Length: 114
Length: 111
Image (cartoon, rainbow over all chains, first blue to last red; front, top):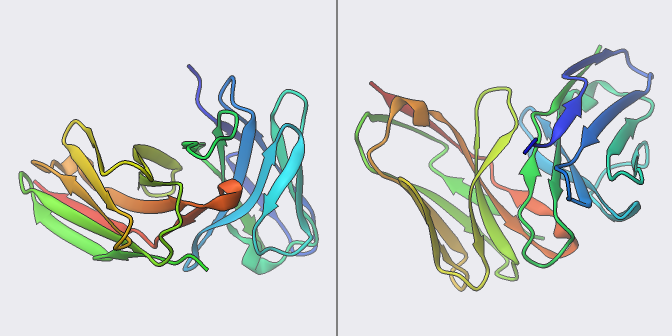
């Protein structure tokens, strides 16, 4: 069974540009989560999508947004990029949400903002 | 606000040693606790998931325990191998399906 996939592997942008990151969940999973792992800040929760809706959001500005498509894949968009947005962005998926969901992570997209 | 702390931050041991990694959290209202492994520059590999109603889980040489009332979890690795070298992350699942992560323990197992 294929795991969570993310594209691209690496992305280089300049300050002020927009970045789009993509995630395909494990087949049968309806929930997608996005996390940011910036140097020195640890892993932080960004967004949770389930059944096409944004269900929860971490403490990030509105320029971080995303969506979930009918096939449950997801996009994370980061507008007006800042240098501190440089990080590894990890996507995770889980089956239909219960209180006990285990999250499975993809390999990540390394975003570098110059 | 949930806070997760992992001790030690780094650990270097000789091959074959049994070791314990510690994780503590400030709010006992959790749904579950997951232990992950992360190799440099890579994503996370889920090692063990403990539901809030459980006390421990085992997988091969790994055993994780959970004491919700004291806000603690331990990951026990038996007979460590060089291939176990990685960063180990503890994360608690709370309302809103978010995981709150600790800073990790960087483990080096020397041949």
